[in-house]
Image (cartoon, rainbow over all chains, first blue to last red; front, side, top):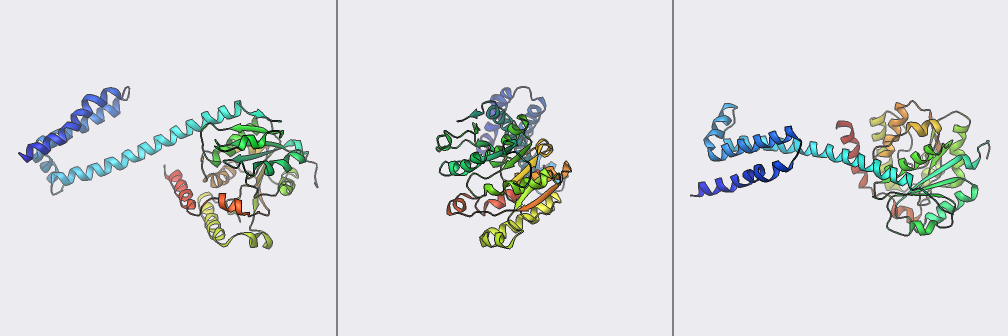
Length: 110
Length: 231
């Protein structure tokens, strides 16, 4: 029973990802396909933990859960870098905008 | 003044964030000499603007607080747009002595340099003024700047600088916060500008010490620099 519960708890957010969030990420094909792939692989591993174990053994990792953890650490690290550079870019654009407005609206006090 | 610079050829850029208490006394003498003063208000939430009322200056305001580097660049853009011959950057908190502006401009006017930077580490009497904790941080910053930019100066974070039109157009600061002090050096190197350090006296008041950067922030500057290098 406990086995099924944890499966449901893990599967629901992945289903939610597919149903609710991906349709809202418009025009980012690559990103969306990637997220779908992650969700599907995640769902397969949850439904069939032995599949994760097999894959883990194939690459020399003891357990499927360990493999999932290693991959997710890398995943989050890369995601962090991508987000950081995106924030930098947005910040640069925002700066340009704020600067343009400041220069245009320069006041001569007297 | 020992040379032929006319004060109204000189734009003095003052980045300012919540300096309402002192901004007027910083700006007043500059106006009296006849410099063109450009105050860039980095979205202060104090009385900065009211404090400046009645002074014949240019007032620019950032709608969002972006940081000192961004404010300086906005001021420099404004100067370039107005065809400024010379631009000076000057701290709002009264740390710099306006009487030293001609000293900073002199090598530029004599065509020996495109940029000059104030340094508090060239004259014994100036060094003596620097609080001990500041000295350690600044010495560290000199090394960091040297390693990152290949320009070895005696003072790494001095906001008192002067430049000619050529440098004005070459300097493009993209580091919005404090890492701009190193970025200026990179710009100087890339554009092969001629630079010179000029001794200046930094006036450490209780106010400026309080308002100045905390020593901890130097760690943030370092991280900004490293991230900029690798990303």
